[in-house]
Image 1 (cartoon, rainbow, N blue to C red):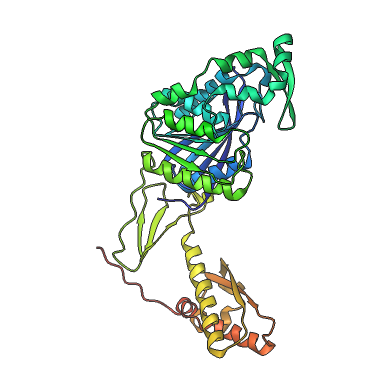
Image 2 (cartoon, one colour):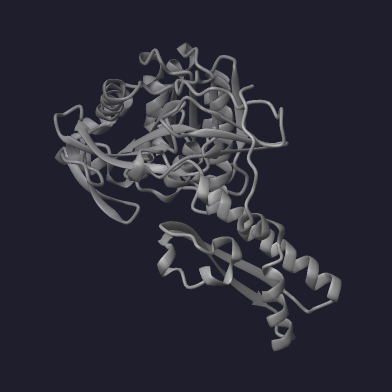
Length: 417
């Protein structure tokens, strides 16, 4: 099952490695997740980085639940950044893993951007449920980070700390931070990792050079893959670059994770239209129309996941699309200068006594109680259309086959298979 949009976003907190509350965002797909992913952002970035949002959106579209959070002292999380280091970041990641494990399900996918990539490589071997790991612009060694404040190294050594500017913002870097960087060997962790790995890197990355990707890839065992993010900057600032990376990650991860959603497969096209339950929630259904596959559901307000159109939405869509097609066929046959048709369809239930149009329809004469009322609002675009053309098109709209079917009584025969 592939949900078509993100249905839910939850703002959560959990205790980090130093006891501070860490702010997190959990993006959930429209329906039970097939698996959970944990995303680690770049150094001094945050969970709300735009590229991270695009990545999460692509993964939720593919059925994943995605947790992203602000490390201690960053974004909306509590704590002092000056007291953190790479070790505390990896410990925060493991705290996020534990929260997911206790509240939902442990992550099967780890994704890390820049230093977050080094962090997920460092912890992947400690999370037995992980089935796939992805890095984006990750350094092959933590000492690489020291180059970002090389001009302050002497001051840090002399005073124990220094205020440095990173991405235009001031941060206090202490000697313990530098000492901790020297204590980690990322490629050694990669060499010991048995999890499928996708290394993504831009060949023009001016923050973390492409040679870092080569070193990570060389150290990793198979199965491993490399994807060049040609033309992208380090932060994937261009939406097209971020969306390309996100789509590739979703495709890669889907190959390796175990589906935890419990969803049943879509049925075969044994009839022109086949509808079957997914086993997820009370209303979510597969809809198979020939070679087309989509979902039907109900809104969250009545207990559904809002993973697809509701039954009356499909009915409205049938009326709207048939209306548009009928007008196009008529305009083309009559060679009318019709540029575009847009049909808005509204549905509600009204009392027969309050329905002004009811008297115009023989099939509704004598009806009492509540009736279904569909309203069409048709926008006809075409600067060269005359008023007479527009009036004729409005008349033709009532002749669309679905309109006639809905107005007339239909015979429905039902039997057990």
